[in-house]
Length: 232
Image 1 (cartoon, rainbow, N blue to C red):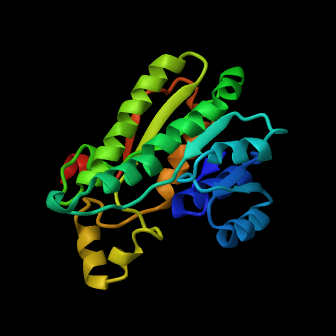
Image 2: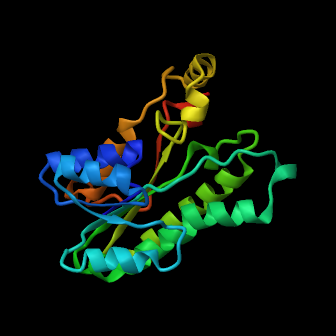
């Protein structure tokens, strides 16, 4: 299952998994983007908005005939504000999108994942461990995801593996407001030691973590950030 399947990382992960003959179910809120992707890749899909109550019931109904072995939760946001402008609703909405609904997704399929010795892949951000101005909202939510990762890895062992990928800014739809300006895009690329903004590497790592090739990997926070968290 891929939550957030129409994003750049989610769609790349879906493509890589289907190319390797895995059966994939896509979940996203925008049918106009989701249906063409599912037809292109030959995948089933659910139209579900993780901000809505009981969204997981819709996904479970659509996958009732499936034997779920892996869950990737790639729903995310970029919420940038100085602290003095951060409201309680800002924090709640970001936590709902990034954390609370991730927990609901895991709870919804926990028993199936346990039965199948499954794998869960969550997504954090470089901002959870490296301080950036105006990142209070998103960094707080993503730091919570990292805490959730190690907690569930301990709780679910040895039946379910839980790992987390922490990307830096990727070449994605939600980043386009920043990247569409060539000057800003060049400055952001130069902020990374590898001097570029990437997108597909995170999907490749997620594919590895979902597969049996990573059967002895759990509780890890893996930075896929062009070196930004360690070298800049």
